[in-house]
Length: 562
Image (cartoon, rainbow, N blue to C red; front, side, top):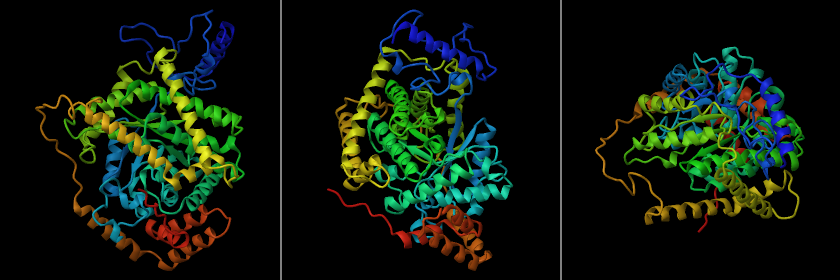
């Protein structure tokens, strides 16, 4: 790129920066030195390939979505929390918000994630243990009691039964008196990554895609600010993938959902801004920063050049980040505070839009109040003390970071080509990337490659080529055992009792009629969300709704592979 083109780009950026709202804050170093909002090549100097780097807020968005960077607004502190029953989790949410958290993120227990009620025999011993138990809209009401859903953005990490859980969220907001059309938040809903990595599915892929398509249509018309899909790479990385695999599989899944929206006749400029992403931030500092920068660039280019998006917001890859759970160790767990801080800093320097920091004790149990506060304060120290919010993409132009960004992008593009090849040459009802993803799921292509990457890394650890402090080096310690959070069996007993009481007090005939109507709608081309909302309003439980659909659509069984 020649000097004149670079100067023209800087002028465009400056005009947009001047017109944008900025925070009232001190943008100087600790010593009082004023810093510029962005840095680039010296005036009058050409920079080959600068069009791939560019300026913040300008295509290809390598340096961020906004001309102001974090000078306009900082990332949202969105701590992931959920345990026990809805009342206990509600108390944790109020603690997070009271301590400066900017949004909520709901962790559900295993029965809820699998679409089962707390009184289901398969739920025995699991109620409230890895997240909060939600059986019906009443639990959702309690979960957000005293929290204005019209004023707080809420993320819900759930995919298999995401749509009925979303309906419970809407009914809880409705019962608060909220205008549903103004709600803002994110639902994960990403079923592709369940088959690829996390394994929390209900049905075959096609019925799940039917529900997701209905949800995309409903949100686009009825709740335009709500993001019905958060395409997740986090679980792919936690399963053992490399950074490039996490990036490529996640964006390929995103392209599949774009194809799903287009197959429904939706305008890509309308529904694409409702897609968000969820990435892992691992402990290799520069690799993670490069991954995030490459992600924005790839998404913008594909949405424009492949899927025909013309709106700026449709080209934006907005993402939440969680620090790497898999990097935490049970040995010398206080070291996890350091790991989390480094991973959080990588996410921030990569331009994350929201962030969750893991607690030091999460390899052992759900976090205590004290460890949850340390995790929250980690973000606040980064935000308030380090100066990282002063300059947009401060590592842009670094030879190492730019080379690594290019390398990860190139690896991702090679993986996209292989996924499309898996789908064959014939047309698919949804699209070519979707065809390749479904074939890759069926053949175990994704899981096989992730397993191989995990095996290679484990070998490197066991040989000592890769180091983990406290595990295979520097193992001596004077640390004492931690006090950890334990979920009482009484939580399950009480949840089952409350559910039985709720079922006794409702109108069973109305519940049966509403669920039967929902199933009838599933046999047509009609959108299922309104009928499902009616079932939830009648206090149909999550298990009743999901069991009715299991009876209609069957249950997915992963093929045995050797």
